[in-house]
Image 1 (cartoon, helix red, strand yellow):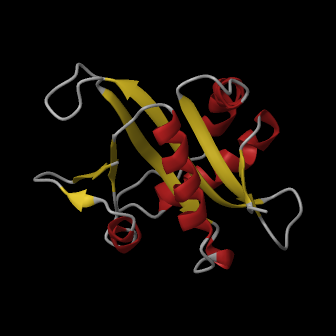
Image 2 (cartoon, rainbow, N blue to C red; image 1 turned 180 degrees about the vertical axis):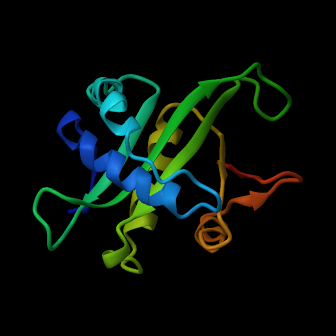
Length: 156
């Protein structure tokens, strides 16, 4: 049985907490959390729409009931097709975070594997993300390759 599950509306506050962990790790980021309360209703609605173009996958924290250990979130987007991708269905990973006290346990990789499968099921063959230097080895091990700009892309 997988540790990974799809995030639900009740997870919204924890999803935002882990997103803030990711934001706080970026150079020059704004540490403010005042936006969380305003963001919660929209996030809850998105988490409650399993057929929409947004998904978040999580692992429950093994030592803190009600807390999350890891998060990945992404969207499926339509872009006008092109050679090699005539349908224009593109996946974008925009939030990957692991609680600092449970890193190096494979949670982010497991969540990414689940998100990549979700993208495949929706017909996305190009997956894009931007990566920190710390996270780049994980994405490279999943098959992502650097592009000329900071964007990484995986062809499925």
